[in-house]
Image 1 (tube, helix red, strand yellow):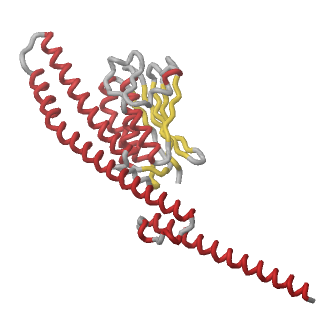
Image 2: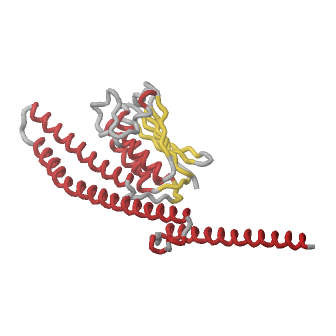
Amino acid sequence: MTGWLIAGAAVLAALAVVLLDRRRTLGTIKRLDEMLKAAIDGHFSEEDFDESRLSALESRLARYLVASALSARRVGEQKNQISALVSDISHQTRTPVANLQLYAQLLTEQPLTPEGAECARAICAQAGKLQSLIEALVKTSRLENGILAVHPRPSHIGPLVARAAAQYAPVAAQKGIGLRAGPVAGTAVFDPKWTEEALCNLLDNAVKYTPAGGTVTVEVKEYEMFAAIRVADTGPGIPEEEQARIFGRFYRGAGNDQTQGVGIGLYLARQIAEQQGGYVKVASAPGKGSAFSLFLPRP
């Protein structure tokens, strides 16, 4: 009988220990949950907790959260500094570049020698290139640093394609290029303003590299998860070894030194696509033209 009593007492003691450990475990989990909630809500600070009563795990988590909060503040400060720098650059260069373009244009209207007229036209072209470069860099910097965010929403693709094609129709006609954008149906999730910017960069690239008498075609294909806006041209095409590099900043393909541009349009288009869950891909071969496809998530 005594043995049974001893065994029962041992079982009760073990059960008590288990229950106590369970209460302690639940208490620790509750404390950790409170700390994580405070961190997620942005209200966590080390003095909110009595560190002498925390377990070693809780103490390490507290230090980690403090370091994370400090890191987040530093990132925020850096973004603010970048934003201010970008704004300053944009503001400080606007007037000098505009004046440079104005005086270059006035210079071309003066009686000049053939060599002087050629120099004046070169100044006009370089001033325009500088303006485009500054605008592209400002847009890219703001996107990369989250200063300007895209706001994707379900939208019809047709109006987007129509607006972009209308912008480049006069340029294509002046160059003797056919620009075809048939009726477009379908919807996707995208930011209308920024996606139009990306599509215009693809059209600009296609018109720029397509010779007179060529054709640029815009069409939309719908897949299960994405809708793809495809911009195809009849230009010289891109060698396979260059296709992985053309989306880099300032990359210009071999033999393109005489073509206008700063080599940032495709980079910006890809950045915009990736910001809203899409991507850009190219299919090309020398002598067979190129096709750039802007993939956008479907609703």
